Image 1 (cartoon, rainbow, N blue to C red):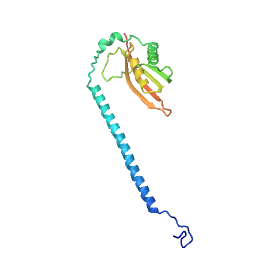
Image 2: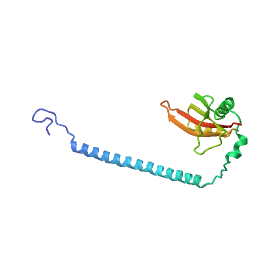
Image 3: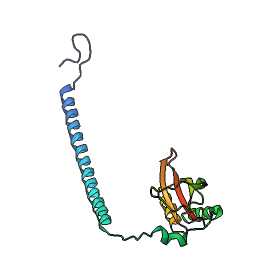
Image 4: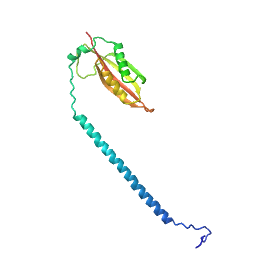
Length: 185
């Protein structure tokens, strides 16, 4: 067999067809392998979805009875004057109990005698205080902990809105709009 062709170029002893067949077989095996692993992941996710749906259904089916009091029944629990220090103390207590003592940019703003946050008409002597609270949290449960601690206090607060924005550094910017009440005598 010749080692050089007519033009003086060295001839290769390997043929291109077996390499192409080998590459083709490798691509097909890779395709089926990727398809198999994705199907396994999909099956696991479908099982997790079924478990989560069952848990959600159990939570929805469990009946929690809550009793709501009328405004007249709540009057003994509503303060009779505006006390900014008491509200600030409640926010600080809720902050500390929720473990947010080291939360960054914790700000509280109080605005006295604002409009009612409710659509229904209330008593004229019932006054409202708007409390804006914002802070940077490391975890989304921090906001829920703060909210639960605030609602567990002796005073009555109405949480009008909660907003959370994800920050670039991985934290959360949490903002609450809360209303407090006092009954002006």
